[in-house]
Length: 349
Figure (cartoon, helix red, strand yellow):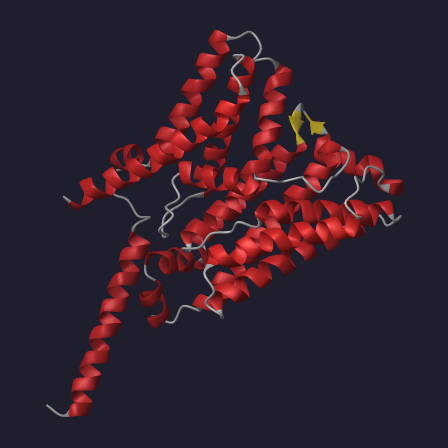
């Protein structure tokens, strides 16, 4: 056999291996028997835990199941859930984004400052979302093209974005939003049929994200990259462009949350969203996203966010110090990771 033929055979073997790796990565999301698939999913058990917690709290307290408390719980977890959708996509692709909390405050501050200057809400919101997309674009380019580790890039942008919000507002609280003041408050703090507006936004974005991850080419590419980036590259997937789009989508969702939160709070300070990135990562991981990449769902992100908020609310209602919240959330993260490890070990046996 000639050297050229040997090279050709080697390349063919590599392509075959790449295709096999790609199919294996995508195949992680496929399933056989519906019942066994459901029971094996971490999201199912997290959802069950949330349902049990809500039932127990309804029986143990007179305040959990009240209309006002449920309104607050759903509204609060909607904010975390929206950002967790974007974080889940980032984790699936094998990355991490520590800047989302700062993007929330930057978006909120751009919205507030623009409207305080007399501009209408339909100008302020697009500007805020453009600023958010700019942050995501920077993160994506640094990770995809310059190969800077996502942790390093987004940790730096965490400080930069919050600093920009401070510069923009001169580190002052903004609470007057010009002629469209009431429209902004209604958008983030109002309700329709007794359901907070942020919940409607969460549902719409969760459905869109779930469809994109499960059925679109973009979603298949994300899972393929997270499962085996080398195989994805060899099969022609535009890895760099997909990574950039994922970081931009995460920042966009954080920007949307910033707009909603300033409307809910009726004002914005530079400490908005501080520490939110940890809660969002926790929601994604508890909901089944694997920090190694290649695994995660939109529904899991929503369920994880809901469970965290139920825990926080239960501590308040039961008279337990909220300082314990970190202990409970951290414990759930550890249990979620252990569950995933045990599941993979059982699958490999």
